[in-house]
Every structure is written in structure tokens, then in C-alpha cells.
Image (cartoon, rainbow, N blue to C red; front, side, top):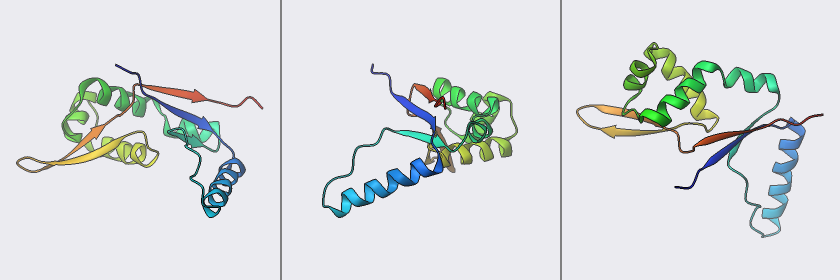
Length: 126
């Protein structure tokens, strides 16, 4: 089985906007944009720490290892309040670290998924 990685890193706002401008110019020239590495980037180490808290990393691990069939099951596995787990999953989904899919059984379930095996951390030394 191939190990799939996702990159977590820090980029300044200027770097991110520069890449956006470069991509737009490439598209305007009629060329396909450069393939981007899959990942999430933050503007500072502090911003990354606010998102990747120990509790949220625990959720990622629990999803990857246990494959819960609902958010309720994930909350039960991690012994956390359902609302707190929902809030954390919402944030992790927004930054691209978790995907959510809906499944209709007796009632609709939202199934969290982690589609990678490792997080690779990139922190520039400036």
C-alpha cells in the first residue's frame, strides 16, 4: 500500500497571493496551471498551533485508525462532547484535513474521513 502524505506548512500572505497571481497569469496565457501539492498552509506558526491542537490531532488519529461511521461514534470513541467534536470537524474540514460524506441509513449520518496516512510539517527557518 502506498503511503499518502499531506503537507502542512507556513507561508506568508504575500507568498500565497504571489502564487495566486502566478496561477492566474498562467491560465490567462492559455496554459494549464502548475500542479500544486496537496496540503494546508498557515500564515504563522501560531495560526497553525491554534488549528492543530492536541484534541484535534487526536480526532484525526481516531478517524484514521477506527473509521467511525458517524460523528456521534467518533465523539464516543474519543470520549468528547458531540458539539465540541462537530465544531472541531468543521474547522478541520475547512482547512482540508478531514472530508465529510453523508450516508442515509435509518437517518442521515455524516461520516468523517481522513484520506492520508501522514502529515508532513514544513516550517521555514527565517
